[in-house]
Image 1 (cartoon, rainbow over the protein chains, first blue to last red):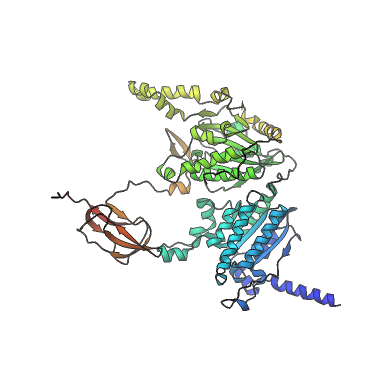
Image 2: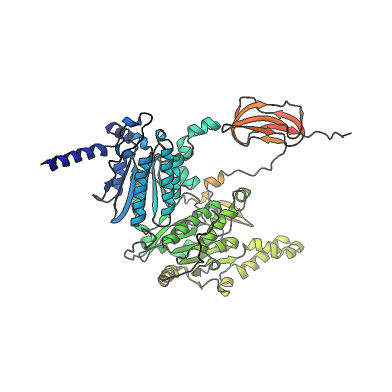
Length: 514
Length: 114
């Protein structure tokens, strides 16, 4: 009998805490167009799979009237569950409890679930919706952030870490997402910045809205801080489920293999790419023609669109794609594109995902802004990431592969395992016009009709060098292939690379040009 | 992604022009301007709290021009080389943005030292 009483008391206590900040605060959350922290977790995880821990954790602050304040779960919900059967750790900040503010105990709940994820080797998903540090707790809040960042760093490259920004995430709080592998944002809901509009206006006199300063679109398109952009929370949570299904759950395993399927995209590969190297096309169509069911999860779609990165499956196995996109900025490499690709390559390498590189680019973007923004240092990240990667690395040169960009895009010289080139490939030290201008400068200058002579020399150069056969003749290209053979050959390359073992000199860690 | 052909522009990479689209970030990039040593610009947004010179005055290299308060710091802006103040575009109390042209200078004719 007494036990029954205890059980009823437990249920009541749980029900009370599970109401978070209470009915009024929940109504306010809904009025802002936001789901509650609990509803988000329940939607994200498989039905009945969520198990919560540390529900009764209480803060210990005694100053500023905090001693009389009870904060449900200290403003954060933590637990474990499954996404389509895959175990994950999850935490969600509860904005209805004192604005989701982060105090020491709130942080300790997060670090506890992170430690669990790292030990049990499963992905950790953090849903951020917090006004920031709980100022009443002073340095305790800062300690909390620091302890989270430390764990983000320790877990990096061991388990996938996902950050979901479903509300404000300001000040120090932004650095946890920045340290994680994938950041998800939602239009009108996500707000991320180091210093908000109020501080900026007071200190600097610059007026800007939260949305224009650090809204979802800004981070998806301008800063590159976000990897996935959605219109609604539901769309965002669905994107996470899809991604979790595509990536390995720790660095000790490969992504789950599913039944192989044929591509459904039925446009002939030979007709996608214009033979004129100056004409654009959408390189994603080439990816669609290669992947199972023509499915492709694009990462950072809006930022630096001159390079396309993302995941697809080939014969049921997850592959990472890096492809120049001639549709934007002619597919050049620039600071942002190099940053974007380099980080993605390192993710793939850390998590045993083979990399397929599709190359068609005219070189690095010229300009004072690029040089002064450090395109040397940023561009070097790509060289570093490709050279360092030990997963199977396959390159298909579709069309242009000029100069430094040819080296950077997973060339043989950086350790590519397989180099294929279409007959349309042009592998050369630079574009024919530029090369002819330099090599035949004297002839052109001395000619009666300079333009005619220049054109003649350009044509000669194209005839002799704008093809894959010079590189193939030196063994830098393993096979010149027909476009329609691409999927078959890449699949074969992946198959024979299953047991790839590549040694690196012993070191604590490298020093990449961050 | 728009497939409208009119979106494509000519985009020069080295000696060749490619048909392609531009990104918002690329369109919004700042064009390079050769710095003019006779123009004193604000290096940070802030408030002018003191002006120590007048128009027409010749100021020696290293002498204070004005104080620009920003981020709770009083930044003393000094004369980069001896020259005449041609124009002052700010007043005490003005809150100014970054890269604002605060002072314009004019070369002084070489005065022969005895």
